[in-house]
Image 1: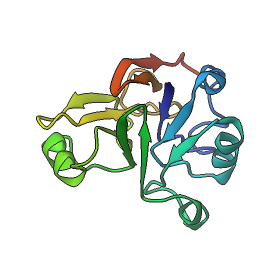
Image 2: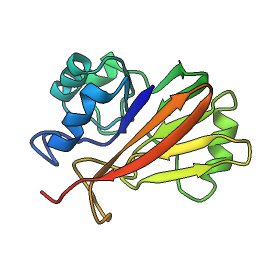
Image 3: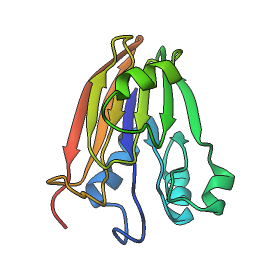
Image 4: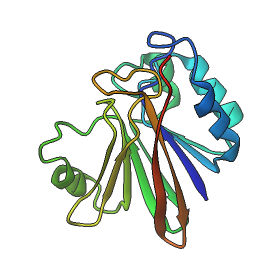
Length: 166
């Protein structure tokens, strides 16, 4: 099962549309994750239309229309792994311990907010993944998103995709 992870799209403020390489990944993905800060409902509508399955949450920049359609935390069981998605996890310092305590029944936590790609594993085994942002690189050299594979209770082929400059 192929997963596509994104967060912090901030459309149309940070970009007018999702980057073409990211859109090209949608048909290949069995499940698409979005960890919040959409800003517009049009992007949610687009991903709902083009994704086989969408697992998504709202972020701190998402107003009432998005909050009415999305949860603060979303859960999914895929390929024998338990996933959770949330926008904010707090400061980087202590993140693994804090998230392991907050999500004890989770194997993989997808999060956003910082626009900084992140891939670590807590001492409990919780894998934490932040895909960065495909539209707002902030202090990163490039915009980004993640893909990975899930099969037989294992996460594999986690790949950070760096997008070309706009």
